[in-house]
Image 1: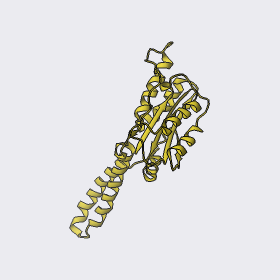
Image 2: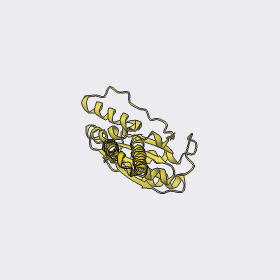
Image 3: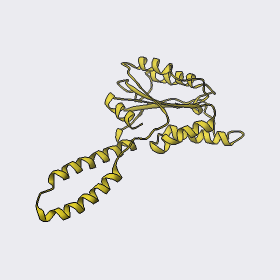
Image 4: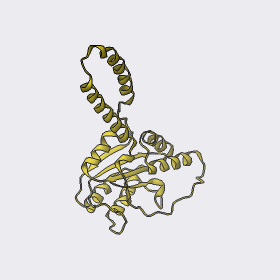
Length: 209
C-alpha cells in the first residue's frame, strides 16, 4: 500500500483546499516520481477549516486515535501559527511530493482490531475445550470469569476520526488524479492524505476510521 499527502503549510504559497487538491493531483499523474504504485484504487482522507487553530483541533482526534505523520506535522504547524503573531516556523518553498510505502500492520486501530479478533477466536476455541466433567465445573467457572474480564478489556470499537473519508475507484494514475483534482473547497487551512492499494486493504482502513 502507498500513500501521498499534502497539507496547506507545504504549498509554495497560500492556497485554498481546492487548489491544494490540484497540486496533489499533479503529483499523482507525474510518472517521474519514485515508488509510484502499480494500481490506483484509493482512500482519500481530508480535513479543512477557516483558521489554523480550528484545523489543529479537527486533526487532534485522528492524531490521537490513528497517528499519520503528515497530519501530526500539520496540526503542530497550525497550532503554532495560531498562537504566534508571526510564524517563526520555517516556511516551505514548495517541496517534491513523493509516494511512500505503508504496511497495514502499522495501523494501530487495525492491530487492536486484529488482537480483539484473535482473542475472540481463542474464546470460541476455549468454549469447545470445556469438558462436562463434574469436578472441573467449579474451576471452569472461575476461568470463565477471568476470561470474560480479559475479553471485555480487549474488545475493539472503531472511533470517529473527525476527517472526511472517501473511497475512489480508478484504473490509472490519470483517473485518480482527475478525481482528486475535483475535491476540496475554499478553506485556506487543510490537509489531504491519499492511500492507494488493493480494495481489501482500503476497506479495512475505512472500517476503522
